[in-house]
Image (cartoon, rainbow, N blue to C red; front, side, top):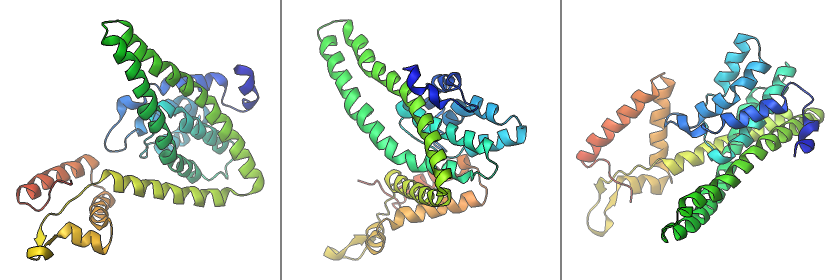
Length: 279
């Protein structure tokens, strides 16, 4: 396996660095949080490489801060975007004119498509296959049931996770070199920033559900405020909620305080019938 990737290590990042990155991605989900999801796991996995690339403390802190933004991806393929980010950080460390916004934009653009593929394969296919094999044996009283469940799921998982570490770095290195040679960096930055905004917008619509069941009208013409607003502008209620949270973040409010305000406001509004359960 090693000879296939050996040619990629002609800069600062070595094969050993990527192997360390692989091991550090294993607890990726252990620090998952509702504020920025997998950002801590992403940054922690990348931290030794960032320390190597940026011996200057100011540059190192800037790189760490750059990766503390919101990020979420299927944990079993997290090595792919992290190693791509490592390759882009390596290019940034070697080129003072490198646009660092490209790093965040590429990460965000990959987040949605990779998660869709990862969730479908690991959660929707491999987990069900492993459960079927393990359960059938466990129902017969065999100790092989749980053992095979863990093996069927985790052996492919760790093999894929390991290989994607090197594939991601190689892809990132080759992609950056070709982009810089062609002079398309500005176009790529714009395209990935648009894709990133689309991903965040889709996540907002998927994860935020708000219902305002206050009735308007009488008889057969009765409707709710949420239906009226969404009829005028589909997704308007979700957009309104997003705007309120965005405004509070712009005011430098603590995200934990914002979540507490939303929780208390939801309880009070639900009690008085202003908010309802989305069915």
